[in-house]
Length: 156
Image (cartoon, rainbow, N blue to C red):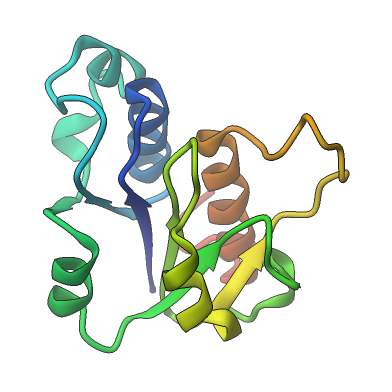
C-alpha cells in the first residue's frame, strides 16, 4: 500500500516542510509539481521539515503534464473546496494519490473539470471570509483518513 501526496505549485515553504515531515512519519511519498514559490533549499522549508529530509521519498516535476506522464494510470483524488464528495466518502485503492493545489488558488479549474469524479473535499463551515483550511492541515487530515481506511499499515 502506498499513499502519494501531490502538491501542485506550493507557495509557502513552511507548509511544504510540514507536509514533508508528515509524509515521512506516515510513510507517504511526496510529489511536488512546479513551479514553486520558493527554493527547496530555503531555511523555512528545512526548519519545518526538521531533520526528516533524508528520510523522505521525494519526487519533483516541472509541471502537471510531466507529473501525469511519469505516473501513468495513477488514480488521483483532487482536493478542492468545490467538490461534492467528502474525503471520507471515498474507498481509497492500495495505490492512492491525493493532490492539493497552491495555497492562494487551489487546483486550476481546468484540471478539476476534467476530473470531477475524483474530486474530494474536507467538510468545513461555509464562511465567506474563511475559505479553506491551511494546506499542511488539509494534507494531514487526508493522509490520516486514507491510513485509517487501510488500518494504519505498519504503524503502532
